[in-house]
Amino acid sequence: MATLTLKELRKQFTPEVVPVKNITLTVEDGEFLTLLGPSGCGKSTLLRLIAGLEQPTAGTVWVGEQNLNAVNPGDRNMAMVFQSYALYPHMTVADNISTSLKLRQVPPAEITQRVRTVADKLDISHLLGRKPRSLSGGQRQRVALARALVRKPDVFLLDEPLSNLDALLREQVRGELKQLFESQNRPVVYVTHDQIEAMTLSSKVAVLLDGLVQQLDPPSRIYTHPANKFVAGFVGSPQ
Ligand code: ADP
Ligand code: MG
Image (tube, rainbow, N blue to C red):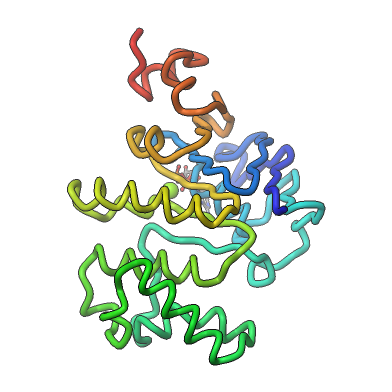
């Protein structure tokens, strides 16, 4: 069990910029929670707080019974996929995927096996010897997903992983993503500003505005019973 819990989380950059005001929520194993909201509403900041890449001004992040506030990002067993993919340009695809396992001193034979399995699952086995710059956007995105999956982390964090793909590819990958991450049976926190993505992928959606959760519900309920005018407008509910 690795329930992710955020308790009264706040991040204040300056007196005026408080992208995360007071957020409390839980994500259970196997749940796919989407943080949905307009650009600049604090989605990436919230994800970075969970990953430990930002320190909260107040509040706590928990996995299971462990308070992670004093745990460095490198020691949090979380895998994050960035919008830009953040692949290492000088490394091959295989090394990009396996580098976190090497750091954790996973035995080489096991690394080879895990990389092979995940590459097979994402249909990138034929790319393992290539460098990122020779790959298409869609292929890079698959490598970034493989790098997250191979770690078998406690928690998956995904920041707009489809936003750099063209519309057709985005639609194809959407269905695949849902299956891929649901089968991991871990908490998934997925960030997007795209309401269609949120509605099709998620088990729960948190609609964010002004640093606060406006509504946290399964997608169908958000659509049929929006909590306020902002939510209704943002997800396109019938008025
Ligand atoms: P989103 O991912 O929803 O588009 P962000 O979390 O990136 O939003 O940003 C929320 C707000 O916080 C924006 O106003 C942004 O300019 C501000 N912000 C983000 N990071 C920093 C930072 N390191 N210093 C100051 N302001 C920041
Ligand atoms: Mg963002």
